[in-house]
Length: 157
Image (cartoon, rainbow, N blue to C red; front, top):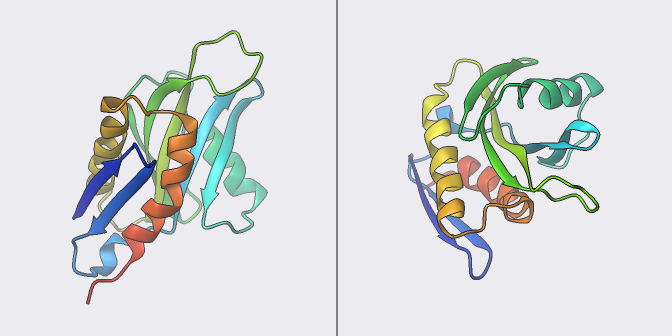
């Protein structure tokens, strides 16, 4: 599957794809959604491509449900893909906000016919490691999104 090494002193996430290039483990996108003063928002999407308003809307509404709790896993259909997300409570990242914490979901878009459980386990493990090191925050999550996408999609020779 995936070997994840987190070096939080250098703010680096090193992940190695150990699935020998299996096509079943290709992510179409990695994203971060969060609850802000304006409601649910798509905070980061990688690869940085223009997505339709409908996809943006669905990601915002479907990946952080109203009754979410810390550590919740969610698998939901977004267009012709499945979104696999893990929701975590992180320090509030907005200025002038009276809340101490807010929810954010780190997620991966995968084909409908791919088993989502390995992706959930990988995301849960990554977020757990960030939390253990005291670095579970928006900046760390945004920094890991492109690395996570590239690692999942690399092919090993």
